[in-house]
Image 1 (tube, rainbow, N blue to C red):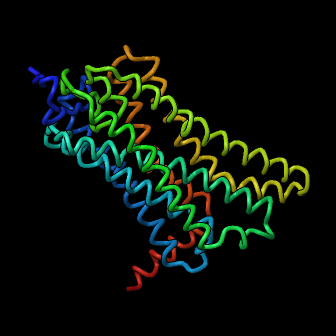
Image 2: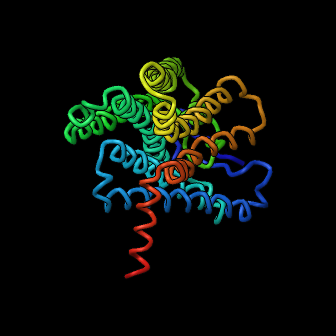
Image 3: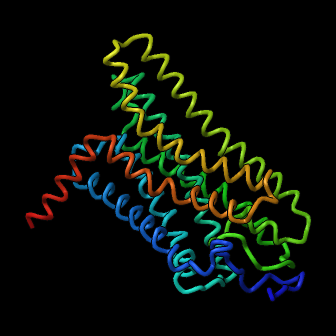
Length: 315
């Protein structure tokens, strides 16, 4: 029987859920999860190592790619402990404070990914539409300021819902419906008025899930307009190919993000398995796919990886 907390007192712990209906197979299910986490950690660490060791890659585009790899690493390491300990050791409990800490980093890194992709779209716009001013616009100082602005934006966006949720009484079941602490999940355990949280969540959706993709789409519209009006077919294809990796990374992030938001908002009575699958795709797809996309589609990264591996074999 799931313990119930007094209305005036915060619960000492939450209970995490694995894969509903497949609890007996958690050890086997842990194998693909372990492989995906390993791919994410190795892939993003390799991207960072290549860019760090290759002086030719110390350019704005690759510095933004470093930010994306760091964000993906953070997202991976945030969910890995609770997911793997649940699947391997059947540990469902997570302390109240630890759950809110995971809430902060999980949503923070997720929103940071969106912000970095927005910054990368600006980088592509300047590189294609203002190539002569590229080096003077995106200096190291400007990139540093953009990085700092991204961090500040995400912290300021995530802290208010954290504090709003933290002050509310949790008097219902401690049982969460995922292997990690999501705001959409935790808010259902509150037995007080959550209208402020709901309105803030709506504003957050407009700010991140709506505004960031719209600005990215706007940058691509301007890029297409510039490319189609001035370039030859060969130059057009080259310019569009330069944007392909970023475009795929955008799809990998926003399609699952929208899917999770829609299922939580409009499919509340759907099978718990649907919610779990959607949430896992949302959190695992970008960190796993981004290094694969950029390694496959970016010649300089592929060459850097080859040189890095060759140097290790020589030593």
